[in-house]
Length: 226
Length: 249
Image: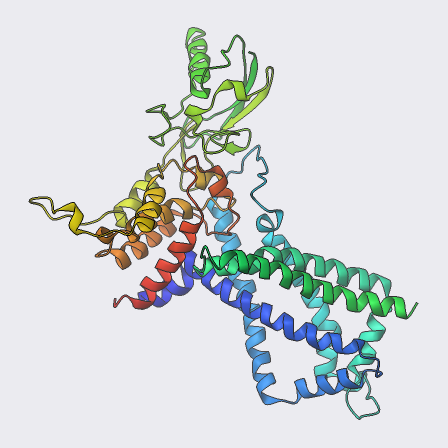
């Protein structure tokens, strides 16, 4: 079983786990953003609430939800283990360290950015997920009879401090993805003269679309309700 | 030219260490960084003080012994240049230069700027070799090596094992060094018999020595005096994944 231990607990193995969970979470963000964009359809949230109803009443989605939570958990726990090990690898710090143009700020601060995203995640889950899943009566129902998650979203985005917090968190996510997307491929050993420039390009486009989309929605709702 | 040096002084591994400041005047701008240190040491010896210990051997940029972190960069400010090939003309007259040893748990300080890099030797001993039969050498042309692979292997083999990659990495990771050695041998036919064992054992030894993991920052490539590419790290990731999944033990 040495191979299994190597695959998950060696320095390289831990990075495979980070890369696979990271890319899995990247897929989740696409689904999440697609759902959120439904709030922009001018139908008083009918489509969005119907979609939310479908997502919470489909056994396959419920199963994926468990895998999603596991994905988050593994990504976070593994990163903590790596950060602790990496810190231990340099017990005495340098008195002077020069920045290098070839080394991106994002890549040096993945732990910090991840921690900021984690803070956001805790608040975010407390805001939307817990209420919609465990206390749906708190949100009321729309005229289709579905839980009115749309109303909750619109209400949340009328608060300026919340919108600012949300947008800042999306910037943290953006910088995290800017490095993380292409880095995941490299951690898995996927680097090729022909494909890597495309992967780096795709990572940037992906980051801009995901973060741009997630920023657009709260900003739109905030200004609409002014 | 005149320079102010802030040099890390540490008696031994147990000593806490501190920076000492030295003023040097009349330094030839064409002197190498190590020659400037020779001047400093002669001055210290004449004053009856302990000279600064620093590693050096060939002073031709190929042995991998010199090792200072100069103004926050391993081997100093010039790209693809070892400390011994760095010259004083690349510094300003009157500049203050901060000199520290490689900082890594796996590279304990022996004295001043000298660190113990035998962790690298143990990683090599764990698998960075090929088996060669004794007896008459085989006819070289009968072993076919694609030109592209030969080029890549040669580029990886340029690694002089100085440890600048470890010194530059925020995680004190030895990935670039190990990846260069793994790549060099994995790309050549002679490296095939031990291919799976090599990468698994070298990575296991690297982890045992306490080097950090890779965050793909590219700081190692930027600091490497031989310009070893991070593509080698990706290749090692690939080699390791393949070896752990396909080896039968």
